[in-house]
Each structure stands twice: as structure tokens, then as C-alpha cells.
Image (cartoon, rainbow, N blue to C red; front, side, top):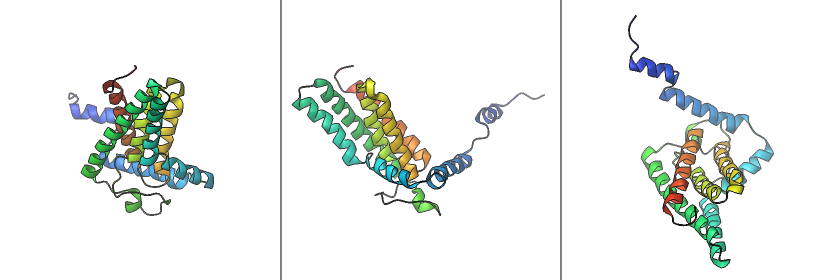
Length: 196
């Protein structure tokens, strides 16, 4: 009996996962959330949720904490808002660099028979900018305000889900955006001075 080669071990561990299989799984999940799961109430909620991941909303809630910290002399809000803004700005920069480098077309430009909604988009899909922004802010605030952490994480997750539901991102775009946003939230907590 021959010795098992390292590649054979990887095949056993990976279960035969290849890039084409991942793409088809990504498309299958996209179609599940976009075309199979649907109702008018979800249509309205998901469009509203997707807008809460926009630049205007996420910048607004970071500045709201900063202004509250300055006007009410609550240093904790000032630090939390500063960290959230740092995470938001830095993750946004990285997200846009990766979008241009990967240049993945959005599902709406590539797939037939999908549901679309009237939400503004650019041409690039990977990673999801709205998801990146919501996780950068949501995880920053979850770390700053642990009593509300589950609400912040839930909000960020729902923004990501809504991006697939409204037909503008694949699930892998959302997953990548959540990782980038969360990573920069943790980094900003480590580098921006303030409370623990």
C-alpha cells in the first residue's frame, strides 16, 4: 500500500472543494436568498436595511457619537465614535482597492432571472462596501458598548444579508466585507487611544 501523498490528504480534508465548486455554491446561495426567499414585507425591510449600510448613514452614526461626546463631555462616546470612524475610513479605503483589483461583476450584470431593487450601485462587487462599513461601525460599537453588542452585530449582519436579497452582491462578497470591516474595527480599538 502506497503512502498517502500530501495532496491526497488535502483532498480528504477539503472534501473536494475547488474554485468552480465555490463559485457554484456562491451562485446557489445568491439565488436562494434573492429569488427563492421573497415576500413584500422582506422587500421593503431589506431595501431600508441596505440603505443603513450606506456611507451617509454609517458616517452619520459615527459623527453622532463624536458630537455627543463633545457636547455632553462624555469622553467614552468621543473615543467610541473616533474608533468607529477610523475603522470605517480605513476599511473603506481597503475595500475600494480590493474592488478595483478583483474587478468582479455584480450579479445583476452577470446573472439572468434575478430580482433587483432600485438601489444605487457601482460596477464592482467584491467585497461588499455596505457590509464592510456596517461591520466596521457595528463591531466598533459592539466593542465599545458590550451591553448592546448583539444589536450592533445583528444590524451589521442584516445589512450584509440585505445586499444579497436586493441582488447586488454574492454571499462571498458579503463574507469578505464582514471580515474586512470587523478586522479594522479590532485594529482601530488597538491603535486609537482611549478607554479599554
